[in-house]
Image (cartoon, helix red, strand yellow):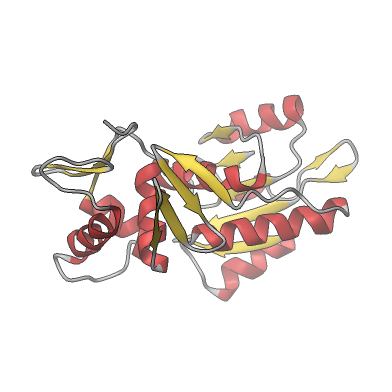
Length: 225
């Protein structure tokens, strides 16, 4: 179960968890999260403790059927006080946002293995919008072309692909990949999108995967024309 209010973060976590063959239910409200806990008895809780509505940390340490719910905490706050408080409340792991897809998958698989004593299936390649995304080898495949990606390019592609058809403005992309406090040059996002497009052989005039929305940002095309 995923409790996250930030839509881009929620979407990229959901897409990334496809590498682990999970069924994921998502909510941004604490009351609904408690109801889902009772109804679904989740095997894993990923909770963003930076929720604006209420204190999401109260979800940490929950027990279902006599067993603690394995919990991964997400937060933009990486200070020691926040970490210690989360662990004292019963968190099993702690990830500072922004989080890379490969780190999220690795930590999730490790926690599930520690908790349930057996390996959770790992699917290294998923298909999104005409692309094969290989998380393990950090590349994408379009047709017969294998495209080697940097860590930032991979994170950018996951962010865009997890929001098919939605326009993400530059500030949203900047916050999701570098964090809200990151001070960047004005063309940082555009430069990385341009580099990714070159590797995808994506002509901005006739885009196959990433379209520019003038004055707004970028949109991942849900299907290849």
